[in-house]
Image (cartoon, rainbow over all chains, first blue to last red):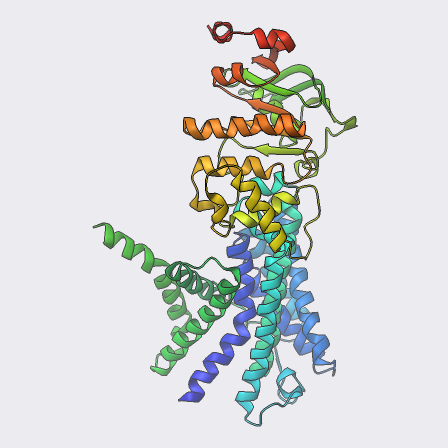
Length: 291
Length: 249
């Protein structure tokens, strides 16, 4: 049973960077970016190409992030330079990436079973799952510290202000287009990192693994946002941590659903309904209060 | 300081709803002047301000600031000289960011925003002192989100923010239109004080003719995209409120 919760925790940590990416695009920049499905798979594809070639895992990691960042830059350029709606720009890049991922990988599925990876490169604990968990946890803590620092710097304040009031930022010498492109690059670099982690966690890369993954990130961010409002939190650092709490709650709900014996075919439907519930609940409760 | 030459601005040219917002306007603003622009809605005042700050580009004509031609320079680059207070108090500040973070960005208006934490203890102290001069008690609320404040408070802070960094030109587009009389007085008095103490060239648009009479060293009236009156110096000082009312009779 504890193994059951640990697995959910592990998956939530691996998907955590993607949730943070969605947090940056959706909450910091106010941009609905769904390049995610493509950049997530791209990170996993780069992993599945380079790890079997015995590239050092600590080099593959930044390369996966770079690949994701490039996808984000494409979406950003389409959105800002061609003035195309961000949602459509994301769909275009995501669709294009599906073919690119297939071409890069050469086939639709590559196993990574006997490949040295991040989780086998460092042995801190003999228990396999514990070892994986600690490695993922260390990585996530480093990520939280880095993001927290960036968002508190002058550049980070400019990022947050651009999403909050673009009229003001233009008058304060900020190139909104440039900073949005950087933001989408950061968001998708984080998503690429999740692709890197999950492909190693599940020991394979599949070109379909990204389909609908954006909803997982959205759900995590929506849960964290509900928690933020409920706890009246302004601190950006706490908000980042709440996103990871949101990711954990999301994975636990999915795990419990499966444990209840629900047909896995219904998993996406359950996911969609769960996200709907998170979005609808505060509104419904408000309407009830008014009556 | 600012030199506008033969500015023409046409919206929707060639279409049925074609509007000539500015019809060949040439105008020079001198350093340290406090200029008040009046005129009916649609007379071209705001378009002129937008063309100076780069939010809109003229159909023809040139804009110079400090002797440099800036006609095609985007808004975010002109911010090296220009600070602005908007008609809508919500436009000048970021509601979800703290007062301190808003001031930090304003303090970097003409500089690069780097990966360096600038909201230091010393910076907080500087902001606290500046805000205390408003006498609104906001200096104790630096970490509160800007969105918690009233329109008047936000407008006064926007004006203070505009002089956190080097400023040559201050553009005020009906800054008091959404404010109660008391907040409006605070904002205009502060603008006058900044103009006098720091010698910032100030341009104010207002529909309040009392304010137009009370403030500024020069008064310009717009009508249908043209300047029809330009009064300064002693003539402006002698001007009576009834005279200005008479222009709009």
